[in-house]
Image (cartoon, rainbow, N blue to C red; front, side, top):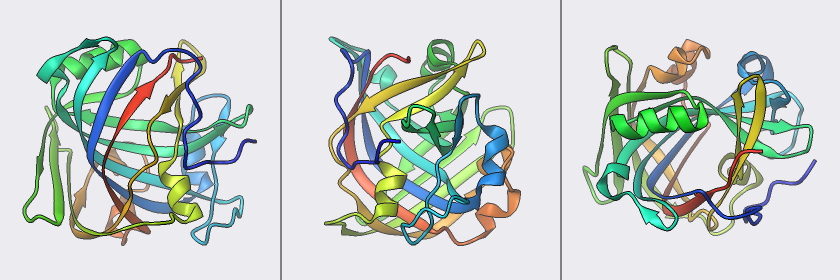
Length: 245
């Protein structure tokens, strides 16, 4: 199994899509692997790490991640404002038999219909169309609110941004330095690699949190009633994805 590095490995080939991820909010809870394993595609298993940075083999993590997509391009073609929108996703952490550490997305709610339909068709990811918006109530706060169209499913997260992190802990690297996603399609699980600069992470704290997405994804519904175990913020990175293999 390869170690998790804060620096991305180079993509094997040319990127097929490039995006800027801005004002990224990471909210995480630790859970037992038994809560995650039933939701994973074939060929991957929960990636584990304890809150103290030591691998106990039983602790994994659920992430609620909110951010703004901007400057989407299929190099060298830019797509303009149609590629600018807010996304809120629920993800869990995985590793495959080749030792590749990645994520599995249990849901992704996007604020524009066309990117939602396109991403579902191109990648088979569980995208949903939502009304989603970003606000900055104060200079040191970042707030997201979304509602999935046709449902009462909502998510609202408002964080206060703290000081920059000079040296991320092992856990902070584990939760953010994920250089690919495991995606099931046509009975097979593919690994879609990505790369970007090292995350410019900040500590953060919750001002307000209300979330239905984690329960809607089939995870323990009471999870979001608990205090998160990790809250982080990053002003942004530019991300490039390679083709799934």
